[in-house]
Length: 312
Image (cartoon, rainbow, N blue to C red; front, side, top):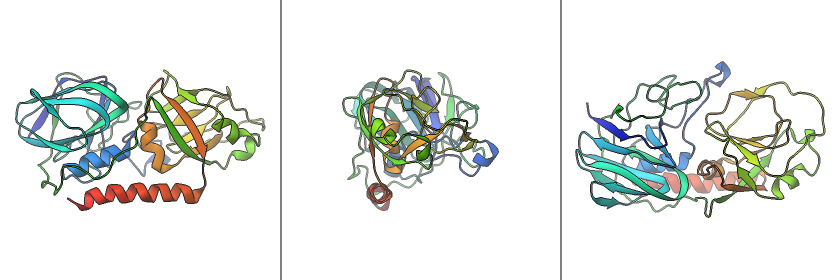
């Protein structure tokens, strides 16, 4: 069985698939990719199923060596990627010869890239998923980020796809800024009538105290008008929670399974990947939308991604 060796791990490189669903009632978080669009696109380009495990690469990339010739693709954040002494193109599939080091250099925009390899990363699945959940040290490779000297087993190579370059581009933060659309929450009555307007009134900055669980946001504070605590209830990725200090938290894939803070809104599914490309110091503008607009945006995104899969 072939493997990939980690010479340098990068800042935070983890194994991720589409996530661990069906276990939240038992306190097991979904985990999964911060940018599911880029994860799916990279897999499609090398002929994998959408839920094959990839490497999520955050801010600073790794150096890797493959034991055999493999087709790989890197999608998401724009890194300089080299194979041996040759520059490789992001956003398309390319062949890596056995023993040639794959190195990640400078990053120009976005925070997370996804490296898919034909056959997928074949770590042991737990609760039906290979995704790494860092807070509980569950899944992936030993439940943690990769370290120098790690070796990951690869699955049998997938049949090569018909195309190695997609006719789709992923929206990325430009100049460290993104606009995220939100649907108002069922907790809206706990906030003042101007709460959504206040959320949209100014840019919020992703705090240094942010991670895969959630982004703490610095900006205008938002206060509730109803005193008392909420009973804990299930929470979803993209929820904009407002704790007692009034500074919102945007929940991400490693979030807890339930929470008691009121939720002002939820980032729409079509914008979750864009949110996942933000890093500390980046800024967000929120824009309210309605359910038909959210559905239309998701349908357009899915059509583009499914179009790449259909060309396999």
